Image (cartoon, rainbow, N blue to C red; front, side, top):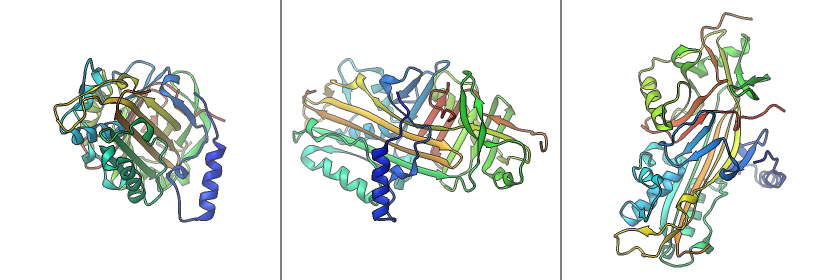
Length: 372
């Protein structure tokens, strides 16, 4: 696990934007301030989950994003049935429930497809990214053609990008926040009243405020079709159960804007995490469809989640792929104190969707940006 400045990426972005100012890759939406780059094998206090059924453990983060489920759903559609495997791990049954689907996203924000090598799936992925995102997609996790050279091999891929900006950036707080685990972290929000906050208060919609340790708010962005919701609540047994308790409170809410003097303090996040689903590797696909080869095993199952949350807004880029082939290698007294200095939930979902496309339970400061 490391915090890095990737000078090669920055140099590439500079050259690209210098040559063509109208071309802005998705990578350019992110910055490297406080960036944490890690793979799941390096993380001891963060679980990257393929489903919302993952239990919440005290002091641990649980991260879920819908891209792996999108790729899995495409495999189901391609073979015409739910995939199964001998001695399959529990995550297979969870994925086959398909609780998240394309219906929970807007068409402009994602690409998801699967196909046989014989039908040109690699070309379809390349063209799909270029056409859908007008050449601005920044894929980092494309499937490797050398893993699946045979015509009957299968590849699935998904890509998601969101850039939700606040109309008025919040204040970058100079004093670090002390999180529940005792570590100091960088934060943004609104503290003692300032006239400049008047434009920020409408961006903070209080959905359900019961106490300073039990409340749900929405941070309004320029996107009318997406919601950014933060919930300081008691966790359920799993991430899904926590969502199930929070969503009815959101549905029943009568939103009210924050008022002069209300406090808001949110820790910043900036991470680039990759999860290899080793539990699935080497598993032989079992399907009844006679058009699907009987010797297909999972050779690659991986997901990357690039996420940044700060005073400017929320940026999310995530992609996943699955490869199936033959086995190879001082103002008013605040009425609402909204300080996220203890475990909390971040959700991103479409306004009309039943299921969010991103969920993170922040149980420790491992993923939070540290002060410089």
